[in-house]
Image (tube, rainbow, N blue to C red; front, side, top):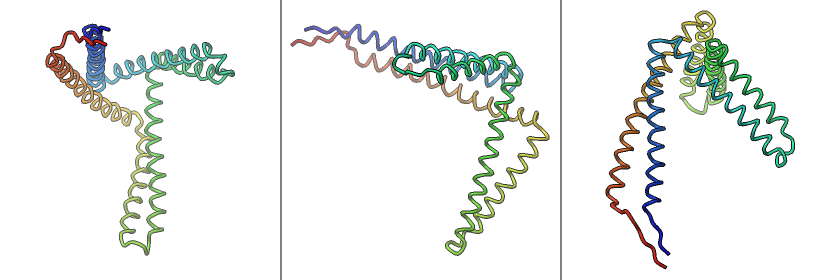
Length: 212
């Protein structure tokens, strides 16, 4: 039996090139979105809404299609159909009301962070008071968690009274993160490409024969 490794090596190279381009495209998209978020907030929101809406639409369609295709194995597919329709509806909302949709998601994230911080502060206060008499540092725990609660309350007042400013700050943070992540992924893609090319060259194998 003779096995040619040349075709296998070519398939591996093609797969690696595909992965490299995917990482490169993700990096370039991250850089573009980061720059838009920093210098043109409305355009960044519009782009984010389009990407998110398209993803939700595709995910909903795939969910419904998969449920219908596997209806015999799944039995009841009502929940999957409902989930798919709801996802499609969210996708349509994201594409139709882009700024309002993204703003609502941003506010949900902000309020979730505030709520989690308040709950963690209250739990921390309870644990700190419970540690009284057990450890001498319980007072610092009370102080730290009380400070966290105060910050949470201040954030609530700030978000309620300065919603637009909060969204602007959030957009800047997202923009910086996206820009840095995009740059890192782009650099990594080129490094990976060079490393892989050198690895293939070092192998210097074009054909392997296995006899049995």
